[in-house]
Length: 497
Image (tube, rainbow, N blue to C red; front, side):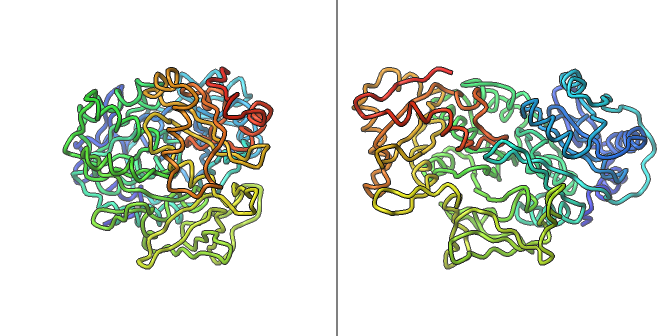
C-alpha cells in the first residue's frame, strides 16, 4: 500500500475514480474530482508567498486546500475558527502569514485581522503524479492561551498515518464520520489522510460541532443513523452526551461502528463501559500535536480498560524518574516555529505523568504542572479526581483546585442533562453526589468545597482549549476570589457569566 497521501490520491483516482471519497452538507466529491480540484487549487495558491493560513469550518473546500498545500510544497497554517481574534492575530504575526484562504463565514474576520483573503479555489486541472512536500505549522493553544506553532513535515505526518492505518485496521470499505474540526491535527489525520490512504469514504458533519447543549448528541445520533459509519473520533464530552442520549432512547447506535477513538482528555472508565454496553466500541488514545497527534492508542483486539493503549508502531514511550512521559518517534515535530528545534534523537518530554504496565499499556496520570500539594504534603494529580467526577453523566466538566483552607475544591459545570438535577438538589445532596463519586480516593484527595456552573459556562468564557481542556490558570484567575470564600455552608449553586 502507498503511504504518501498524495500518491494514494493519485492511485485511487486512477483505479476507482468515480467512487465517492468525501461528502459534506453541500454535496460530495469522487476521488477523480478531488484529484483535479487539488491540482487546480495548488496552481491558484502558488503565487502566494510565505506561509498560507487556512480558516473555516471542516468541509470539502477545506480539505482540498489542505491537500493543495502538500502538492504545491508550501507551508499551510490551519487557523482554528474557534480561536479568539487575539489568538488568531498572534498566529498571523508569529508565522508571518500575509494570505489566508477563508470560507464565506470567516472571510470578513480574516480581513479584519489584516490578511489578504482569497476564497477556496474551485478550478480543476489534470492530476499529475506527485508526493508530499512542504510543512504544517499547527498552533496549539495549550493551557495558557498563547498559541505555539509546532512544525510538522511530510515525514512526520506520513509516519503517524502509517502507524494509525495499521492500528485502526483501516480498509477501503470503511466509512469515517468526521465530527471534530479539521483545524485539529487529530481530525485532519483521521478525517482526511487515513480515508485517502485506505481508499475509504468520509462524511464531514461540521454541523455537529457547531451545535450547542443537548442538541449536540441528538445531531450526532442523527448523522450516525443516516451515514452508518464504521469509524469516528470523539472527545469525552461528545461521548458522554451520546451515551446519555442513547440511554434515554433519543438516539440509536448503528451496528456498523467498529472503531471509535476517543482522546483529548481522560475517559472515565465507567463512561467507557456504558458506551461498550450500548454498542459504541470505544478505544482510548493519547498524544499531542508536537508528537504527530497520536503516540498510543487502544486498538481492536488489543484494548485494556483504563489505559490509553500501547505505543504506535515505530514509537517508543519511556517514563522518567519523576514520572514524566517521554516519547521517541519519527513523528516528533521539527520544533516550534520561531523556537528551538527538536532534539535530533527525536525525543519529546511531554510534561504529562504516566506509567507503563507489565504489558506495555500506557496509563496517563495527569499534567506534571497541575500537581497539587495537599496540606499533608501529598501530591495530587487533579485529573485523577476529575475523571472520577466526570463518570457521572450529570457532570459535564470539572476542575479540581486547591482551596484557601488547604483542602480541595471542585468547580463543576453541569451537563445539559444534569442542570435540572443540580437546580433542584440542595447542598447536602450535591455533596453526597461528589463524596460518592470519589469514595475510592483517600480522604486528603476528596474535594470539600463545591461550586456549580451552568452548562457550557467555561466555553462561553473562553476558558477551554480548542480540544475542550480547561485552561487552569485562567480558571483560577477568574474564580479565585469566589472560590477561596466557599465553604460547604456558603457554596454557590450558580455563577452566571
